[in-house]
Length: 252
Image (cartoon, one colour):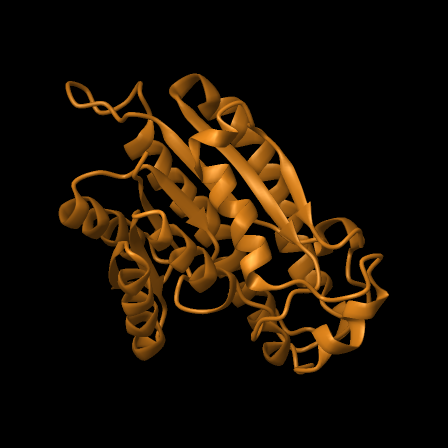
């Protein structure tokens, strides 16, 4: 079935890989981005070249008005919404918690936790088969991006990031039970060491190369490998999967 999805943080890394993979299925994709318009437009073109439709949508996931506008843009352009990939997230340079500023903590939690909750809330409002009065939603799927850090804890690296992803796990479990009766499946993917730009944001651009071999599979993963799991959870092929925390971490 051809679907329409919104991917937050969809211009790079796992979000971009997911958008392109959706395009190969002929899906329509809203590619949300925070500031890098060029990367977003490049992703839109890649989705279109793959066989899908796409639009770039600028917005800060931690700002309610921006979130509502993102969903409006997808529905106004494509006429429907079938799923959300709650992917937008940040990480800060590695540090001990005792050395982290409150400004750093607020920014990270605003984007990683508040942003994910706001986007999930908006998806719930629009997808629910019990809401919308005379025009209820048709159900759908939410895929949250957690991390293996949620269960590892990332001591001396980024406990704040790990904490934010622990919140995503809890959000996933709770919403899967809350929204299942309303026709919405909610699952999460927990990537391990993946070859993306996020490591440079933490001040360790070589982290995937360095730590990848320590995974039981002996290497870092790729954004495409994570995207495969996300697309499966969005697709009808996973129609009885709800509340799952799917590790894509090479056994780490």
